[in-house]
Length: 556
Image (tube, rainbow, N blue to C red):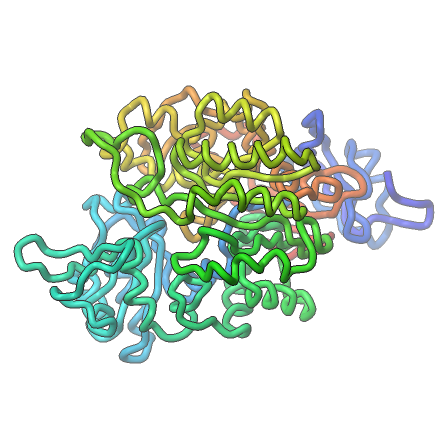
């Protein structure tokens, strides 16, 4: 209890299934909120007795009340660009994609560019990427760029022409222009740095440094609009905190502006862009970044905090660019890869960050990339054993040795069940059954004592956190393909990963992440009771109300 004799709650939730996500995972019936904080948690009778004549009382009808969701890895402003264009998650046919594009361009001026994303080939029954001819049929008068979840884009003929891409255009360094094997004509599918050929001629923010093209920066107004568009959607999912990786100074300024304007509807953890994040990098500027910031991890308040530097080593699994020790299914050798940073410098990068007080979050997919990152962190921690929140991101294939090191020194993992949901249906084509079973081994992480936060990585996967939760629990993709039962986790474990563990990843568990007196009143009321929800129904969960800092920001 935090209430004094002269205070009464602003709001009381009662007849709820309150998932505190505290150390004992206790469940109660009621919660009192006062002044933006959790004031009391307990039984209906005790908490309702605290209510005054002006207290708003919410009958939850037995439904679950959970801590506000912390999406621990989510590219908000880029997601906003997709919402401003088209979002293609859940579209199951090329024809369905064409309908969505045609509908969107019907309200646009001729020649105006349409940006969208993010697709993966296995979401379509055709099991292929859309090509220029698919997109031309839907948009003959507007250039179209549809981003893949990672490592590629599909563009129409107008976009190719604007970029000057023809059958005679050579592949750029670290990129490939897909071509018709008979005619040599570009198909409209661009891989790696070939994407930059189109981004470089796109107007507005799409060709910006933040988006990877090295062609200017979007205005602060554009960034603010994009962030606001995304957060308007996020609050409908009960998301009250987000870690945004790979931000520039301009993006940081946009968040601070929104905060000053009273328009920030989410708590934000900012991870400045460091080595490996963008496709084009200014090494000299990155080398000065730590000195330029004049602060380190943990700087900020309960609304905006700077938490870690964002780095990256390899690419993606389905794009064929993960750094791993074993070949893809049906292949006898490893592929040649263009890595996103110099591995010979990795130990030095990590040590510099660690010794400067910065934590690091690093994108790693394959077992070799994970091993390199964890080894660098392990050595830095052993040499200078300060408190830290270093974490690896995505982290598909850790070895037993890597897991042991992570557990020993407290290296965490930011993982995405959303990738199982969006990608698993296509894994039979590229992964043996054994490698499918080993993919994203959440149970093994937990057994090794590794703290995992569960996130979505929007716009590389859909922002719906309950799809991520569903796939973490069932190991199933959106069309039902199962990666095996060995690495399944429980619903209770997944809920902790979606809430408290996101706060722990960023050093914020003191004031958020669980429903306990004294913590911020960031809450989500669900449309059902979680303990009685079957696994298959997890993906259908909806949010009835979202509370941020004691105020309702969304009611269905």
